[in-house]
Length: 397
Image (cartoon, rainbow, N blue to C red):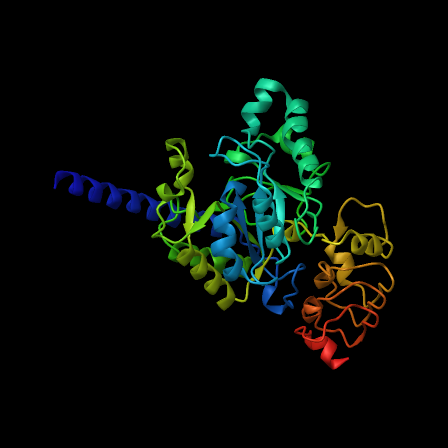
């Protein structure tokens, strides 16, 4: 009985301090993100330009099974886009590298519109590692090593590869200014840590971006998020929410069969109910769902032939990061005969009116539904199957 009373009291005290923290945080965010110079009510909300939104950023890819099991259907196909920050190994099974099955799941999540981002090869605490071994050694062993590992992976059946990495999330949110300045924009457009100055994120940002942790260990409930979503909407800015595992409340971490060392990792989880509540509230407010790289203004492509063809159309084909803003301006695009098989990235051409995709290897045209102004389309000589669920745009053509 005494044990039950003690546990109940501890829970009440914890919840009290959580609520106090989120009340203070909400006030600080509001005070730090008021911009009276903007006439937001008179602006058209255009995705990737000035339509505020949110990005969910999930850390630690040993959690890929729950990302896949509980997130895939909830997030949908290019609907609620999120960023998954990966390592090359499993934290709690002898520090082994990811299996092919796990790699397949990560790449399949990418095919649903999600970003696969960099979280360090071995998930080292960056600040500590740099202090002990030097910055150049950390870059070699944590940054370049994971770039190399990523480049060598492919889906076992589709042979699809990872996109080029645009963003980085610091393990343990540990960093210093010299690390940030060394790796941006040389290796990454943006790098993500935890909340520092209670600032929301503007579009086309380069360098460090803040995030708000919404794991159960920090969050007292989804209601604490609602006011912050409204602040972002009014300020015309974006929020990045950091989280780790996504699991229903009833799932017992111990059922995964990992050792006692995994117990700390098990505390960093967000419930499916909380996630769905935040998603529903964001949709009510007409907030957009972005990846971290999209908030940074960077367009990326699954199909490397597609990226090569797009680079031929932009002002500087050798620019490291392809600007979404430049793609949005285009009204006509000829991609005929470019050996393209995946249209990922076409969703950024929001003003496209005429599109030629003839003589390629494309079988899935669903992303064309993301182009509101498209009225003339050529898809001849592509392997379109008769039983495919066609894009509305194709039916109109």
